[in-house]
Length: 79
Length: 224
Ligand SMILES: [Zn+2]
Image 1: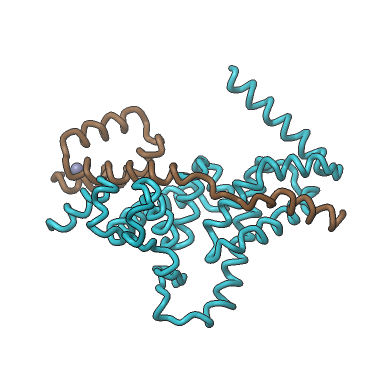
Image 2: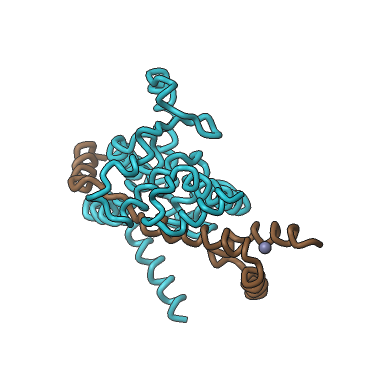
């Protein structure tokens, strides 16, 4: 197996790696591949950075009167 | 053991809330609204073509919850059930939107993504550099990520939002969307890759100081 094939296999695991969904052995293999492969390591760092940016977006701010509107909408309708 | 105990505690708390909801308790609905309305609104707003419709759609979602709570028999968690309704309503609204508004749009102002969904570059991509003095680097980046997110096909955007922003696990997302685990995983992989791609193409090189990672990507791309 040449290095490119290996890189492709590891890159397919980037997403579960970001989610903490790999097993201990898989994680170790990934970490050591990233240590020795600058190309994969760069791509992974992009995704890691993207993950952090997404997390920082947070929940979108709802209109201040949303809860009151929802409660009002329900009581008007009755059951 | 304490995890299990708290899980049981939460489950019985939820069962009690569901029982109250079924009994028509106004207090229980107010509690439900307080607990879920903001995150439901947020997921819907990021899912719709026009986020201005999100409050109305959220209203529809809570009316549906109110009407159908008697049909909820704890086959899933209450939270999963609520989000399933929310995602369904959002998808109805998107379908309505593309039937009714699509024709009104001039095609040159709008672009289509891989799935034939229209988005406007003018709306979604922030005019970077338009106000260089009053925008701080991190809000600039957030705006760019938010904009890039809007260019993703809906199926990818939804899993990315549910996983990365709202923090749901694979299983719960699969239940909410009624798809299997493998589909969730592959949509996440593709969504992340597409988002990375969108950010690479949308961010001008002059923004390099504001986001070092993106500039690194750009210079690597340029070198090829
Ligand atoms: Zn590699």
